[in-house]
Length: 408
Image: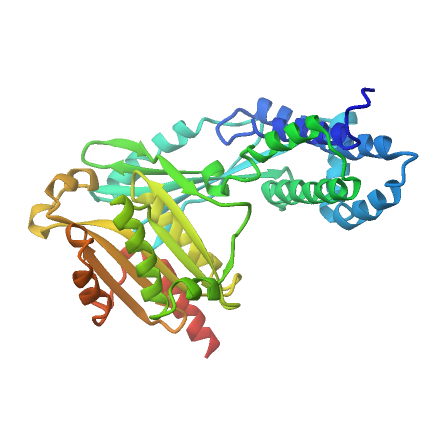
């Protein structure tokens, strides 16, 4: 073996190979290919520790490796990874099951019965979506917003495959990072592999970007439109920041004012911004979720997902900012969302907030006056306008109401 290669190079290459296989796993890919990608992943993932032990044999680092292995990999998920590797190598391909949930967004969310598929009876998602045409027309609406969520499992098991995969990947990353710090060895190949691993998507891209499609069905014209989406994400997982950090930058005003000022400045600089949600937690930390979309279905789905997190994640307040069009209601009767745009009278930057005490705040700014600080001050320090949230935020409000009622 080339002596210029560091002790971690073989393990990093196996880890890269494992992730490279998983990178090809996609919701729309056929079962044959997805199962092959999973088989390769489990095999190469398990090989990481095999080659690492060989590299470290007869070195001073072996006891450190054993300690870190027990810390990061000896757990239920780690045991499952070993079992799957042995199974796919010696017994059978991974027994994959796919489930699809269709959620329809009216005033409330309607979930259709879950669809379950295996390699024996898979169908194209386009076939499923098109089969909804008659049902949607019967609703008598101008348009129907809905999403298709893909969930993957090991057949006969209830644990979400994605959650196990992400947990296992993150644990292995932690082990390798700690070993790198202990070994403290320069290796160009290892550095290149780490750079390649850092730009991979599967374990870094938000789950909904991988496994959820958003649609709208225009009933008058009888056609479906699938959303284009973007998400802005820094780092991995939830990025929670102490609220005191925001207070240092904006020392005056309440949280709603600080949120306004932050995004008014962004809008002044770029004359546009992506919709952004601030999620405030009970431990006085917050998270910013920034995303873009081509149809409003994504907006409805996002707030449904946030509503499901309120209790579990101890969320105490939700703030939201987005650009919005203003219409004369008489001009948009019987027009779907695509047709309405050309009838917009003006555009505003709208801010909303609701917390666990059911306090609601909202302000809106005419984008044509956004550079006028006197105008901004007149809006920002006035009483909040109508105590009404947009329809897409209703799931959050209803969940806060439920939690407040149950707490009593």
